[in-house]
Length: 555
Image 1 (cartoon, rainbow, N blue to C red):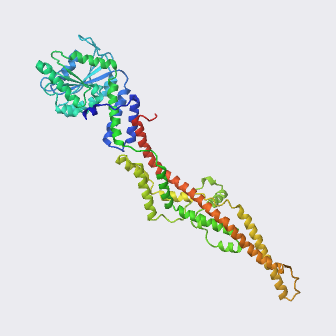
Image 2 (tube, rainbow, N blue to C red):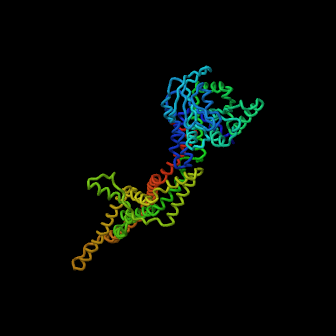
Image 3 (cartoon, one colour):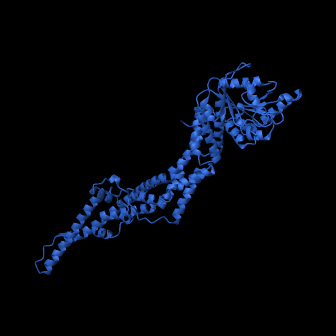
């Protein structure tokens, strides 16, 4: 397990690209996963951005150690000068000291590190011939100091520097406080970590190799198998040249900062990846959309409206094509759509045009459809729950809660939005009735024949009743023409009405199907705006995070 923690996440994207991805991911997952993971990732992003923003090629190396480990003496030995005072009995390093090698004073970098104590030395170490130009060596307070402020300063700086050199002594190299507090949690930085087994001059010659091997094995078991272990003595100078050469190589390569930041960024991305879970799609499936729209359509009264369209077409068609006398009686019954305050678009357009307005700006009215009852509401709630369950499978609990909140965010406004959508749907009942006018004309002609026949008979009756000479009979097939007109006008009108009823019924079914399609389209618009878009926004957010973590995102 320790070795796994020390391995870096495989990501071949440039550091700048990964850092940009991390910054975006932090914003996307904020409030959706463990806050500690988000805060840690945000700190990494801020730290890496700040470090990369600083110009120059300096390599910052912190020298850390416990009380009496010889940390300050090591800094002096590497520097080739007395830049810090080693402690004799108690630690004397109470604040960090930066030793800057070379002509550049690195003010901007040290200000960012918030290190006030600074000393500049030539890049070439006298007597050693090692070129350390560009190195910033930081002598840290003792990590086991009794002062909490000293320990806090160590914790802060070991996160900011490019490399860390840990100085341990033969007696406390396995100190649990050092390993548990610093080395194990920072195992991912093993390539930029050096552990100096100092004061080896105090060990018998036969024990030196054994202690160094034991320290190496301990570090490897903790995931720091790639860390550099060097035995040193500031008294005899053993290993100091090797330390200088290692630092000079790091400065020359100028990759320490990038490697350290890369490890931090990769670890932050990996930690977030372990939190976000998996989900199949960033969109709601077609089946889930249909299920939701079906439930909303029932709650909005679409079946009632479709039935009213069918009945209204029948009645209107019956009035237009029926025998006028019976059609007039049928007109006394209320129109099903008008009773629901529907199909009023032509009236509203006419009123708007007369007032100088535009039909494009008409606001839909309200229907008088009955409010959704408990069963219909329960069906909508079940559809919403099913939608959330099916679309958020695999997401973290906190993200699932946000998907559920998104699905129900407009729950209070949904009934009104559905009602307005139904009211604003053009049911298209004012067209497709050209043949009705022809039948209406025919019916009135037949009615006129009927009325004329009745009038003829009435005239004959009055002539006979008043005692005037009877009018000469006008017969056809032995039957008075007036009778033919009365009976024929009624019979032809009823036959025409019956024949027209077939066409009206066909049209009623067609109009009902069309109305259902249009109403479902309107309900779908409401579902998309008030439910699906908010839900898919959360799912897309998760999908974007996965793309950024996998390196498939397009920037």
